[in-house]
Length: 417
Image 1 (tube, rainbow, N blue to C red):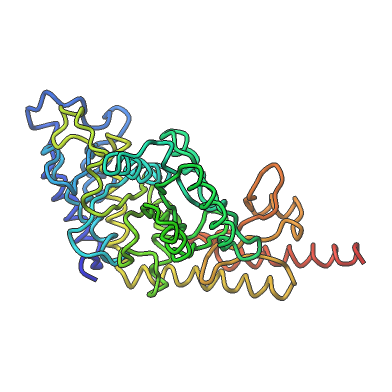
Image 2 (image 1 turned 120 degrees about the vertical axis):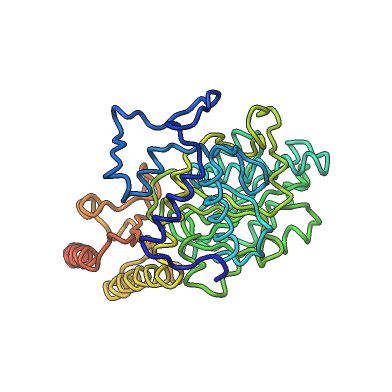
């Protein structure tokens, strides 16, 4: 690891407080032009006795603004200390987790995976328009039917068509035949530029797309394309356990990545991460943000620097080896559940090594679903219900579920016989 080194609590605390000292101090400095201040002291405690041992809470109270993209050069000098932490976090994710080369990526901490995914679509739409003089009706978002709904939002917001490829029901793999048929049709209809979404653990199934199928098809039809990896769920999980993960920056066709620290990393909500190869972020340069030093390149604009601090603290506290152990335990719990489902003859889908298990709805009753908070693929007509083995999901929780399934399975068998 080049950047990701385990730190103890004292080292983490000192690093965060040093960064905050490099930021503006609203109490002691005469800065009159910024439309911001520390958090309202009548509501949020600024008791030094409490805050001196709480670096994240201190960052919240000090209220750093991380408007803009701090990997691009000049940013607001008033918050340069915590901006540096965000830059280090982006570099850590790009290099140590996604196997990119140092100093070759831009990015920022977004409000979540949805924003990061839309950011990618925005960049590539503008790229095709500027570099190829493409019309919006010639550009298409390409993904599978299991992809996140954020791409439907992007389609709507950016006035782009979206093409969804069918997946095989049992394996959740994209249908190569359907892909070729649809691409051929779309090319005939005037689509020449494709923004491809490759899933690294889909929200419902935890499935991983085969990037080679997309590349082979698009190259066959001589089409221009850019590939974005939606690793909102899997970004902090799959690459850790899979040394040979093909969906990383060593793949020449991958240009950008979404990760979501408020899922597997257990950071506060509002910690999506967007990472993209250098040279592409400029296609969404908002020069009209002239009062902001460095101007703006992000969809969200102003955002809390405390979120970047939180993710940095979490990763440094565990270190790479501690993080592997944390994820490995979840994988083993999920594997145990799969083995128990096999014994019961219950149909399910679980991608190799995943901590998401989707059970066919026919094996469940409403009591079990509600008792264990299982989430359907569709609230109107559910075909699948998923279990996500997060840190709080202990073996005891899983054992209780299996016990419930055994009772229902036995009763159902007697009834149907």
